[in-house]
Length: 503
Image 1 (cartoon, one colour):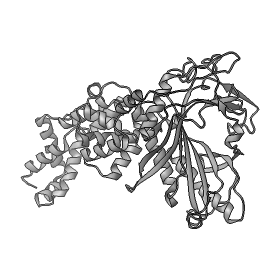
Image 2 (cartoon, rainbow, N blue to C red; image 1 turned 90 degrees about the horizontal axis):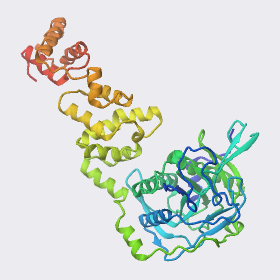
Image 3 (cartoon, one colour; image 1 turned 180 degrees about the horizontal axis):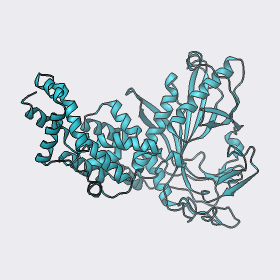
């Protein structure tokens, strides 16, 4: 249960203080093996089954750097417009924590592989905000603690804890921004937009799936307030391991209000870590935050320095994909959609699915319609993103083709998608099994139209008298008779022909 915290209103907080943020994002790389040993990184294995003397920190074991991890770090640095170090090395970050078997983390300190970059992010109204990057460095993840017997899953109130070291040694890239100034009241929005854009960059590079809900990407939100933009930075708090875009925004907003309440009442901000609570968007105190000196960094004696050859770096630069913001702008123009609609597509995680559906033969309008309509609704109900649904872009393109050919109407197409999602087979197999094709036999359709006119004489007379809008009732009657399998547009044409009326 979270503790109550006094807050100042957001408007009053921004009227009295200027927020400064710093965002630290940890990205779990998608390598097959760990950063300093050959243990598998595959998820779902039995606890402690993917360990060895090196990642457990046993005496006499020696680490070896994962080459793909280094390559991924360079790609990330290049995509973030960073300088790539000609020479860098690893360091030991010393601190005790039960889920860190070596009692130190192999990381980088004052000599990171990438530094001094930036990422331009687009806010909801189209404004571009530049976030300066301090560094992107390589390190390893810790293990995982499971606290048992308590009500909250946290250590407080638990009867005992279990430790799984399968994750210990997983390759991480930590991306640290410079202090983010000048965002003002939009600071929480900037934080969310930055993490969202960074996630898209990481996914585009193919170095990680960057699934925040699976812990593959986590954000620490550092925040402080100062009286004016000209004042010195205030004392910061660090809200740890925030794991969704919405939560990044909420954590920044809450801390602005909390800091403002403390400072306005004459209190002092404690430099500490904070825990974020999804249920109400609040944060609570963790531990007093250490300074860098407290970690007793020193160069890792068991690893040689990393010195990426310049021609290799340039080769990696030339192979970078189109960056997400540029790609979105290009697609937005090609598809003829506005900024708001493109943002909705991005928020739904449907950009790649729509692109693949178009490549499979659908036009852009139909591809967007089905992914952002029926499929987005289904994904929302299941609490997943659209590309996790059990349907392929090629199958969606086939449904669109059946609609374009007049073999399905929209109602029937939705039923076909439902069948595919339920595992009933391909779109054509679902159509066959459920008998969902549009009734195209003119004789059967004409008979249904005649039946509807005969059974609704008063409505037919209204239509003959010029009230064309009344035709909808007769169309509805025919659709009911044909179980929704008629082409509504053709039904309307036949009704008007029978009644000798033109639109």
